[in-house]
Image (cartoon, rainbow, N blue to C red):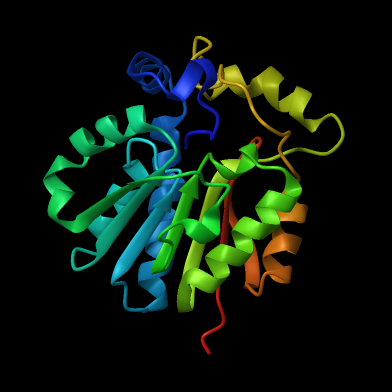
Length: 225
């Protein structure tokens, strides 16, 4: 969830708490998170470890660990301030969760290995080359037949973003300048480009099971082997 640069943002507990308090779509995003868990459950794979990259307060990780009570989890985020928040919000699951603070752009150095890897609102901060490197690292870290679920913001073609912004207040409460007030290192990329990068990284048939305006859930699996 959190970006990789600390300037004036994720380095401070005050910013983290204000961002969470004003995160207007957090409740809405629980639906695609639960869709992710249901898709993994429906596949029948054995889930021993779930890895949440850019985990923020740990909501995505919690949903997966509640769906798979025998699995352990790995929380990864770039923010020390967010770590304190996540440790508190995941306290009841702490015996099953390993916490790691690390630069998400250096994915090969992170403890990614697992059966399910999820990410929420993090990858859109990356430049295209970094996204491709990240997807390759995820593909190499997943077990055969494992799932990667990326719930994120994406670019939209033409003037669709302006149209979406015009009607968004009818469906999504205002954030008050909170959850989208931090800066980005790079502009978001189109969904079709993400699907192509996942294909190139060895994933089989990535798809988009959920979308709301410029936010979407992209799901992909590694070959069963």
